[in-house]
Length: 555
Image (tube, rainbow, N blue to C red; front, side, top):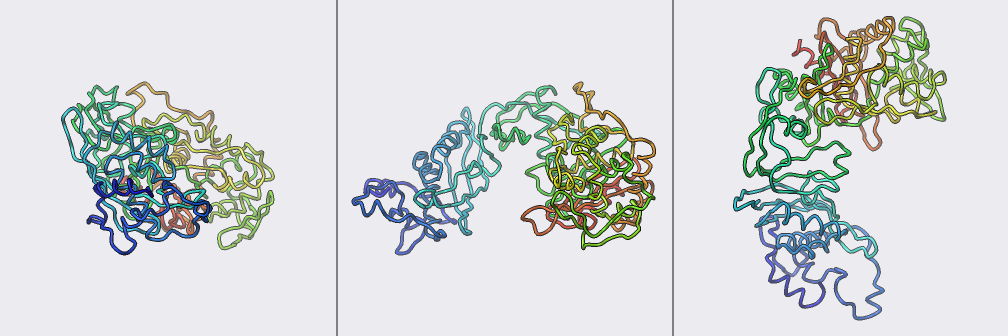
């Protein structure tokens, strides 16, 4: 771009609209100025060995470098100059592939890109265009963003290439496609026959996408024409469904009935708005039916697909293991020191508390970490994994819910990580669906795999557990969870929740977070619920009130 021919071409090209106005080259550094002055593209012709040996650019990017790199990319992309736009990124090959597909496969025309105010190396921009298919067109508009970085090798400013630049919901391997829908649409119904829509229930976007993917061809509908994100291998591994972005012509939907309760779903939607990054699930222990699912963030279904350390809510499973093995009993004295070391790690309780001459029930209710870690030397590395799989139906990747789910993970670990797993840290990963199922298993005494669509609809075989807890162990678990709901860390949240009830709080430390993720799992009668508030703090004061409110409204 350093020679005269390229400069002339750029002057003839309609520049991207930046911040609501066309960029104009003036006597200072601004959008357009950097590009027209060459800016060290690396594409121009060097005239001397001294120029070739010029020092690699380092240090923070200047405002001119960021806006210049962003302007080059956006202007070229808007003009349909794929090669030029790709060259303005740090991965021209990948950018070329996706930008070519944007016009060819997505069929997006008349593109206008409007940049917003720069923040550091990040430049947000608005996308407007027209999606055309067989003579029909429909306007498209959405927001995206790019980040400018120094290119490896020479330090030149380039747009850091990510699929999310093209569309914020795209991952590696995804592409945009306009055409006949891969599957017909579905009309999802609640358990009472009412239609489920994102207008009424904003959290259900990803759930409805999953229902369409699984049941669209089975429900008797006909496909329409749409612009959608077709997921690649990496997104499929993450259980992300194809996503419709724009419908050009409606298909004929089939009908799928779910187990969702309209009143509980509405209540869950209201509760998650009270906290940032909150996720909730309600299930019926006697059947496994999922009655509600909600997330504060609507782009990803953390409630079903999240993979997060569950913190001390995992102590429900751990307690069942210790009681079965004779390593603990609720009314017997149990050690709860300030510290306990195992496998080279030193574990401690919150605020370094201790319980002298306390019972195991007291340690459970107050969530004493060392009461559990102290038993690690008596356990085999795979004991907790087997307990989760054989009794609670977790960590086997075999649930058939009706939409994609993550079924929990309790890997076999050794030494300190094994001990940390007893506390729901280490390699243990769960989501609210998993932890609601744990409370449901305690309440009913039997693991029943949660489901959103009845197995009778398509003959699915739901997952089962190979064994149940003994009557004595189950009675102790219920008593400890009940005691925790009345006198322990869950008492404040569960105040006002009457009847047969039990609960457990949890806080999971996460590297790089100032506040832990707050967890809460509980049951009342024939309802079990669980929730997480990421970066919220202790579960009793964050997720607890949300879960308790659902148990009250459902009772």
